[in-house]
Length: 140
Length: 137
Image (cartoon, rainbow over all chains, first blue to last red; front, side, top):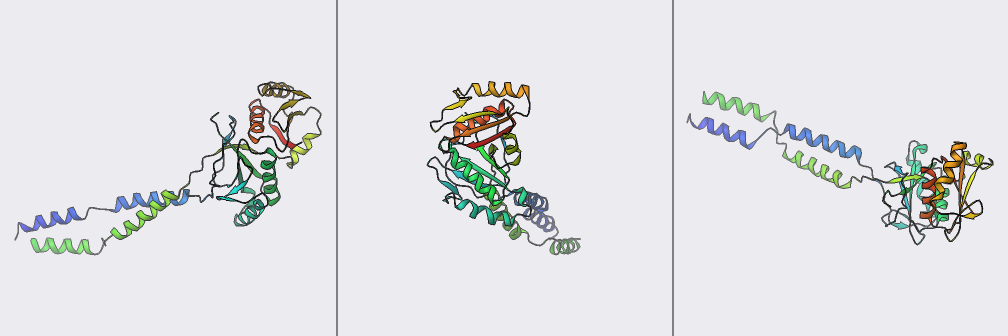
């Protein structure tokens, strides 16, 4: 009887280790990922970025358009055409608390027409976005 | 001795340590969801300098403006002459050494290639040209 006691206690301790530090750790990871997650809608088309050495890192939370080599404007995997740019930007601007902080990234293919890339930028300007960037790659 | 020990341990473990496993499962599922959906957009880029910027419009009037023209066939010209891409940097560096605020205009045909224009723009930026405007022509 008496010798049973310690072995029972030992069994208890092995079955339930102290999980609190692990839970703390997992919670910190969870909060980190919740905070850093930005739900950005990517154009989902392949675009060859023009090579440039003077590019700087762009704002992560941006509205991303792609202009493909066959001169179509893409947003979130759909070809929206030039006329669709304002329809996409205007509602997204209304969601922002500070519209001046809205960023647009235009991923123009190297072989796309320069005029079309400009037109997408102008549509964004008309919709009220002041900060647009064109993507470049550092690999030449 | 045995009875007291067992009772004491039972009381301690019963109330302050409820079964945490379902909560941990739940938190792990959330954690994996956020790890998977986290998109780390790592894009490099340059500003798109459209002529609607008021600063650019005012600079157009200045007479020391450096203008590069890009034709429909992606031919690069400056001052009426065809030039090679490598000379862009030299031209801009010369102009900037006289006046740091020299405006540079890159006038591209709408059907010129975006990649070629971006290369000219990159050369200008590397040479120190800070006020750059894209126009169509």
